[in-house]
Image (cartoon, rainbow, N blue to C red; front, side, top):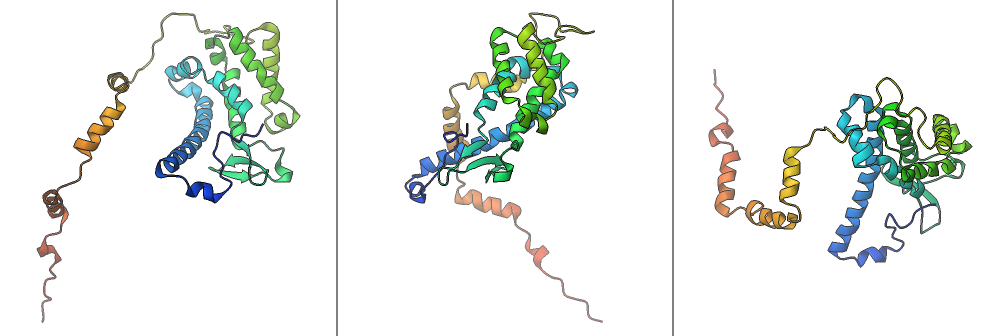
Amino acid sequence: TPNSELVKQVIDPKEVAEWDGVRALDEQFRECEFQVCMCTISILRFLTDHRVAIPLAVTTRLLETHDVLMLLVPLMEKAPWVRKNRRNGNIEKFEEHRWQAIEEDDEGRLPKLHSQVWLTIYNLVMDQECRSRYELSSYRRETLLRLRRYINEVVVDQLPPLTNLHRTLEEMSISGQFTGAGQGSNPAAATPFVVELVAEVREALLRTYDGRWQEVTDYQLKEVLVKETPEEIKRLGQMISIPKEFLEVPPLDTP
């Protein structure tokens, strides 16, 4: 269903004129946040494309820490990259970092971000290593099976690999697990230990200043981001100024 509440749409320019500075910044932040999130979808797809070449800790974070599959299914259902224009009622899609009207003869074509989400799901579900490491609980199974309603002839014609994904989901609905999960030459053994690289400096900073970021901001504004005094400005100007002797042009030698 096209969205109208995820991205702010202004019908009358007078509405914008009535915004104060804080409201304008909030709306700008929401717009930037939306665009960053849409770019993240493409980055996530490329991560899954090259999952074999990246450290195992990344796979663990994708499947367990963040449980990306459980995030992508409701994202697919919500489809925030499609909306209905409040002014003219036309359906628009978010592509090339802007909203574009969908032409009449182009209504059946999948938006690029829609395809990116499908390919990300396909990469994770069809990867044998991911199947072995992904504990398929009843909630996860039922959530993944909700994808079946969105795989139809129109989608498969544009993304043929989804035929295999649909077959895998049908098999999972019967057997209750991924086909071939836990099999193979090197299945992932259940273990209570997880070994991964941790950014110690970042984690330490997050723990130290948790809930104190406003205090840090106020301190930086007062002690670091201070305006220079006239003497400091003069001294800085002398540091970057060019000596006069370099500006003087020597006289030409006459024969």
